[in-house]
Image 1 (cartoon, rainbow, N blue to C red):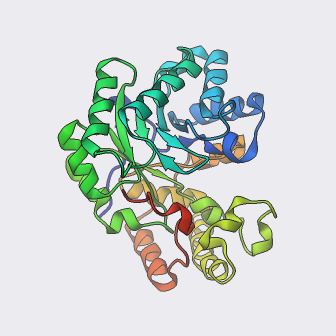
Image 2: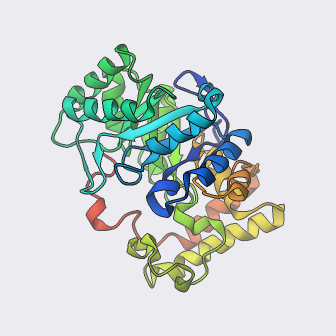
Image 3: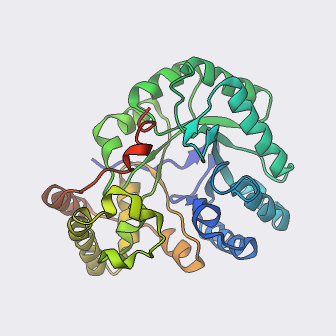
Length: 327
């Protein structure tokens, strides 16, 4: 049974498709002048829920610096954008710090970089910290809300059990998980159902599975030599060739509908009752991704059959990064 995607997060109206900012500062080093115009195109296309990270890029050039530049140029857009920020995480060591000091430091540093041009509508600890009781972390976030430093808080990469426990301590405003046709774990392990039962909006990152569902990957050599995906399990020889088969079936549906493969993939996420946050660094792709394909029940069943027939080879992340998943 299909669901209706959330229309509000943190009490504010959002478009059907959101926007992930990681690519600009994490992978591509896009000049801010160019990035700002792509972000403007996303907003004008209805994608006003923006997802950023304190660790998306180096300390002197991450999402926050880009956001400061954007809202300095377009100050009136601050009221139109719903900003979700992941933090309390060391990107260089891939370790969370969700202690009261760690969370507060992350929020304070973020506010210092933003310099008042935009508020933090939703703050998420990027991963659950196994060394800090969940209650301690949530109570700190609740204090920051009361102090007016963040609007609401969310959870990222969490289990259904963690959602229930956190929500009982202080209401959760959103849960961010990875969701795509290639990554359906949150549908299968009860996380998404738990959120929907509790009325918590779900945000799905990587809806195109790091490029698998763009229609652009046919052989390993399609990846640039220095591309980070060479380290990801689904892009290894053997797994790659198998995964192409499922991707091509999705392309076939898109071609028949007169839309693109990304639009079908994003439309599938929407049908799960989840807000997809595709990331792109070009205006053309941003505008394309903002138009989720409307899938019929028959098409959803067809996709389900392809998934069962072909499956997906490889884990979501390499082993070194799996420790803090589904916390």
